[in-house]
Length: 77
Image (cartoon, rainbow, N blue to C red; front, side, top):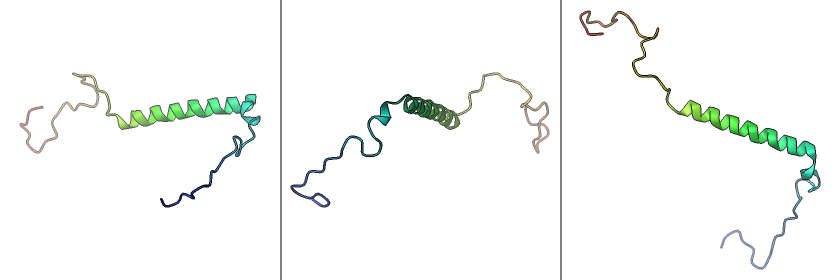
C-alpha cells in the first residue's frame, strides 16, 4: 500500500498539543462550554437560513396589494 511504512508503529502521546493537566482546568472547561454553545447557535441560525419561510394560510397583511398591477386591468385579484 502507498503511504504505509511496514513494520513501523507510530505512537502519539496523549497530550501532544496541550499538556493533559491543562485540559482539566476550570477556564478550559468554561472555554469548551462557550465553544459548544456558540456552535449550537450557529447551527440553528444556519438551519433557519436554509429552511423556507413559514407563512400562515389566509394571511392578508400589508404585503398584499389591494389593486392589481397587471398589464391586464381586468385581471382577477
